[in-house]
Amino acid sequence: MRQLALSLLSGSLFGAGLAISGMMDPSRVRGFLDITGSWDPTLAFVMGGATVVMAIAWLVQRRMQRPLTETEFALPGTQLIDRRLISGAVLFGVGWGLAGLCPGPAIASLAVNPLPAAIFVGAMIGGMSLFKIVDRPAV
Image 1 (cartoon, rainbow, N blue to C red):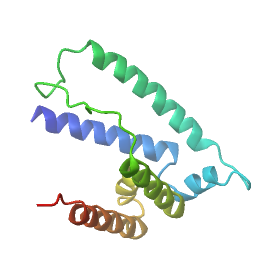
Image 2 (cartoon, one colour):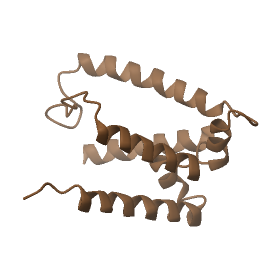
Image 3 (cartoon, rainbow, N blue to C red):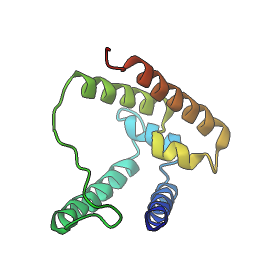
C-alpha cells in the first residue's frame, strides 16, 4: 500500500510539473526543436531543472541503505552503448520531433487533450508490442 501511495504521489507530481511547465503542449516541444525558426527555450529550462533534481536524487540515493518501499535498489548493471540503444534513441527522437510528445506528457495529455494523445499512446503501445514480438530470443 505504501508503494502504491508513493507511486501515485510521484506520478501526480510529475504530471503537475508537465502541466505547469507547458510540456504537454506539442507546439512547445516543436518550438524547442525549431532552432532555425522561432526557437522556444522553455524545454531547455525544464530539462535543466530536471537535471538538477536528478543529480540531487542520485546523491541522496548513494547515502540510503535501501529504497523506501523495496528491499534493495534495482540499478542498471551496465553502461553499454550499443546498436540497440542508439537505434532506440533515434526512433524516440524522431517520434518526439514528429508528434511533439514523449510517453510521460502523452499519458498526462490523455486528461486534457484525449484524442491526439490517445492516437499517440495507441501507437506507442503498438510499438512496444511489436518490439516484444521482434526482440524475442532465439530458442
